Length: 247
Image 1 (cartoon, rainbow, N blue to C red):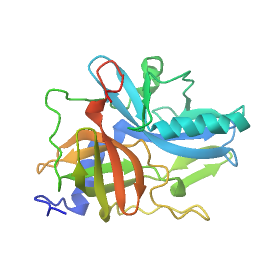
Image 2 (spheres, rainbow, N blue to C red):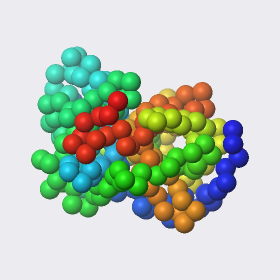
Image 3 (cartoon, rainbow, N blue to C red):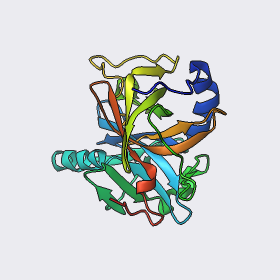
Image 4 (cartoon, one colour):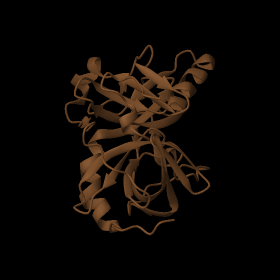
């Protein structure tokens, strides 16, 4: 792997980068109850909020959307919920995405109907004409909501978040791969759920950002998969201004 020209400091990821990106991402989860979270959460993933200049969108992985529909066959009362900026999670009663793509593993949804619930959130403006140049060795960062840190109670649900930074190992016109064997993780510690050991399960769909030497974060893509010490992501400029996916 090409030696990184810029290696962010762990404490700067926590205190300079995470505050920039935290409000444009969050956890999704599938629940069979709107009254109690305890014992009713079937799975969780992540989302990113994007402003194309034409539409305000929620982006997650296509496999997250597919899993929701597969589980709904067995649990007809299953709801897709998101932690936005309300006291209670918001039910995302989407009929279907604007666009979805199996190969790029993205699903894109119009958030127009949910904007009142997003007052404290940030829809990251996608820069089509000045999309960041992502190269081998570039540092990227993301905030994830792993299921291992999910806590369910009768009165609600909480998600522990972790900030990560890694280095791009390969990139093409639509996807990239980062080396997580050298991942820098947040110092935050949360209680693990019993039997849950995967530190990345639940981060699918979270946005990842290129980190400049100034510690300015620029939207680069969306995490789709992790395994064998590799984190795969789809570049954000695959999403057209109207929310369709350019494959």
